[in-house]
Image (tube, rainbow, N blue to C red; front, top):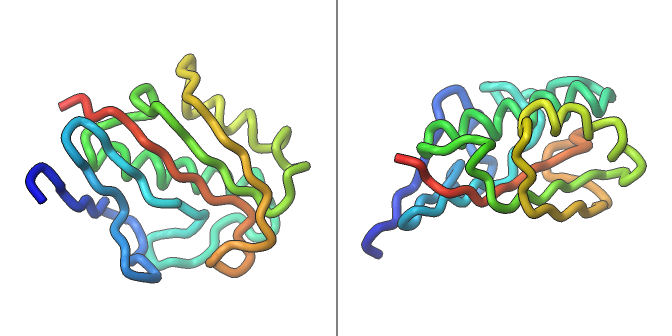
Length: 130
């Protein structure tokens, strides 16, 4: 397919299934769900959803950058939480990363995530600036 590019971001853990960190199609970047893991795929933050959120958004930032984008370019974000009551705890972290930008957003509570112990996963669609 012309105009489709698979993106792998440096420092990100190897995908646990058949996917890549992001796919660029034209001027859009589709960021796969990012979870709170380090480059070796180890859970970061233990049971602390705030620490997990910080790592997750750092991972999203790395993928956005690798794809030629940033949080200011995000048009749509989806946040998955294993406990929707954690929303007020993670909102300050989210605001720190997005700054003044306000993307369209969806928040979904899920029973569990693919990485054991993960409490948050974030995916995004962004406009590519370069």
